[in-house]
Image 1 (cartoon, helix red, strand yellow):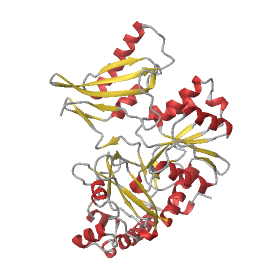
Image 2: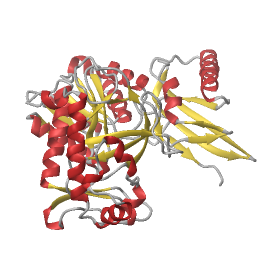
Image 3: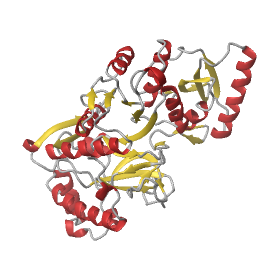
Image 4: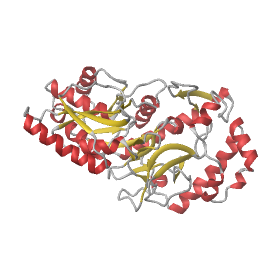
Length: 431
């Protein structure tokens, strides 16, 4: 049973007491790592240093650069013979980031993911198909072990090969998919092209989406195309992987499991805490991991705490849909914006498809933006209608971005097909 009522509905005072107890224990464990031993010694940090959650703010932040600079094992807090798995980023430049797990860490992670899946209605009677890559990417193995812990029949299909994915969905009676948003729309399009209506010809009822930013409009489009409920998942390898936070059936914010992590929202510039409801950068501290705990890890993800109680009865804080990453913000013509702001508008038009590409380029002495978006099957080949649609979308984009972008509506299939994580932005500007 993965409705852990005592933990999930714990009174705030008791939950914070549990967090303090686990935080003290984690500080004791982390003192065995060369990185944190040095940090703790320099700042006088011991388990007795923590008397309230406010004391956490006296501990310095940890960043991705810290992981890279201590590659490969400078961050681990247990002997290497107690570690059973590591995950790593791609590391295209310099050292990759490495996260190491003990067997206890993996067991806790699988329980955490199973809890998320149970929360959205999945049970051991479901057939779960995982379209994420396995190997160093945490999304594959994280959901695999979580689904197995739940007791569901698992289909480790891995990424790509849409026709094979569809065959598995139909032949095995798949009821739930783990899938990235851009591939969900691509898979639906292939189904319809093959004469398959997923709402009638499959048993799909739930999908878990994550790994790339997407708008609420994109989520609703996916739900309509596949005839499912789509639940947002947040995870990152530094915090284990998927299952750090997950939506419940209310689809109004992601419950962040506070018996596993402590969440802070800070101003990304001043690094000071912001009030609940105000957007800032999410900072996470692990309190239930032993091989490689992390303190005040700067995720770079921008979100805010959702205020008020959730009707589902769970008391763990909720974070809102992510606005983007502080390092993904685009600055053009003196304006700061995020790609998801553009997607939000494009997905509002049924005449537009789900595939789009934003290109930033220097023309002469000016930086310009071109937004290319495919038309959907609902668009009729009428030049006058095309011109009118283009003007309407440009006007709405201008109101959102505060400058006028170049917009090009192209035929379906004109843009590159991506079965992995979608590349939405090409920055070709001259530095």
